[in-house]
Image (cartoon, rainbow, N blue to C red; front, side, top):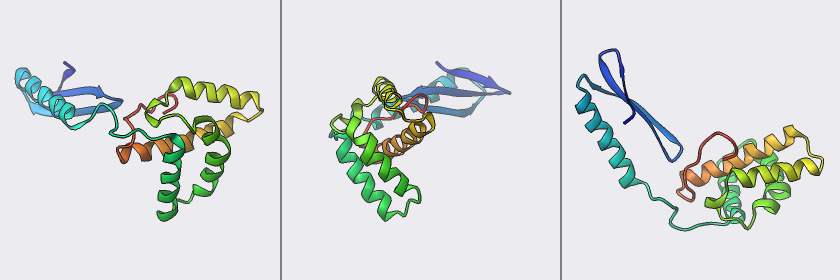
Length: 151
């Protein structure tokens, strides 16, 4: 159990699928606070699927993201469109979105460095990748991911 006492009240703090849940139980009794934490964890387990219902290829997700970015007037989309078409889709295009992980990102980074890309360019490309994966997560097209490392 991830309970701690702050002042006279008990609080909980735990991670589920890369998302941190931290809140005060506003209870002075530890056992009651444990019940509240258990209820929150159970509720989260019931609400979230372990995998997306339908896995998309990264190239399909990029098409959906392009429509979203155009209609919502995303100011950075012109730069992102370049990174998506030239760099990201050739590397991640046929990979299922839920399979993108840190190892694939590290491989991508090594390949880009070998081709002579600057580190700042690679960071911009990862920012675009992160925006696409956040879009997928909000639309329930991909599983949640941690902010550390690549996605």
